[in-house]
Image (cartoon, rainbow over all chains, first blue to last red; front, side, top):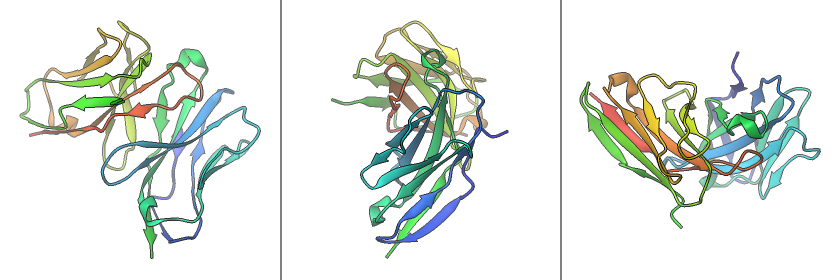
Length: 117
Length: 113
């Protein structure tokens, strides 16, 4: 089974609108972390936001928020007030285990977001 | 502060040739990683290291070797390149586990003919 599933290969959103990018995960480990990265066309990987499995509140970083639904095993990224510069590939990733796990990440296949005028 | 750097940025190899990709980080991070990115498959972990002198296999280690002789450097070697190793290779580093993110290098684009 896929550990990280991103079911939306591509998404379109109009400028200034909000958009939700879906991510579901599969793990039996009680301690895990969820990350979102942005990859623009230039290719670099940019860290956006982190959610720990024991965090009580949803993570927020500026226009990014993570809608964490633990029982559903989902960690959707919400981008508010989309900008043209948000057009990029977005990856969800999971780190399983505690400090002995090497902090390894498993990535989803990504969602290509296009922001339109 | 350069962060994570990768050398070279782009390389073309013929089948059977060997090469080494160099990753360097100046953040004194303990952990380092090599990933490959292929279209439609996200990033997959090749090998990683939790400290100087240590290495471990990731999800797709076959055909690659690594070494971490110095804390700041992590080398990825291809002994006999194959067309299936055509990919974009990313190096990353992080501090000890926790909420710490991984910091990625700019990537190396490798084409094996």
